[in-house]
Image 1: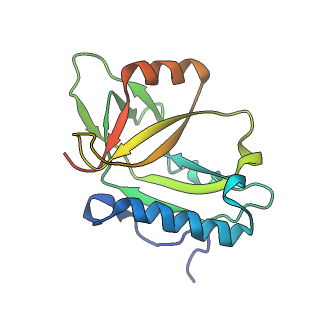
Image 2: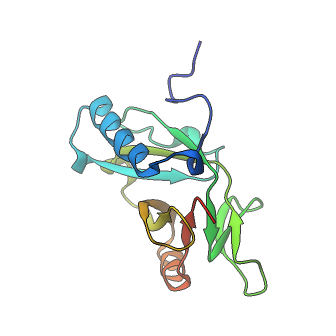
Image 3: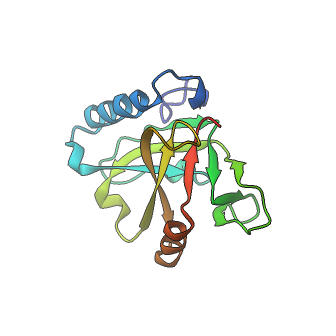
Length: 158
């Protein structure tokens, strides 16, 4: 029997989509209908640690649907397998690194009170010409300021 928490069984390779921004628009419309609420009541969340992804969006009145995304690169930071968090890079490390599979979900805004988010821009290429979506990254207030100063951004194509 398929797992009802997930819309698709396999992660979506974003760089293979002709219009990746359409995926997010359709997913938002689907989430609005599934949750029977307005767009103002929902917040996009993104989790990079798939072990904690099972708790993403499990709140009061939130329909628990998720999409998994892969093929995302990051600039200005990297994902640490040790801490399971995104950390700023040192000047001696490479400019781009591959992110693990992401889990995205639209959840009720009331379920995420008390968290600080940094909206990381996701571009279609490293040229930063076309913004696809801002993926919210849960972080501390201190880290948010550091990510802004470092210019952390995501890409799907080099």
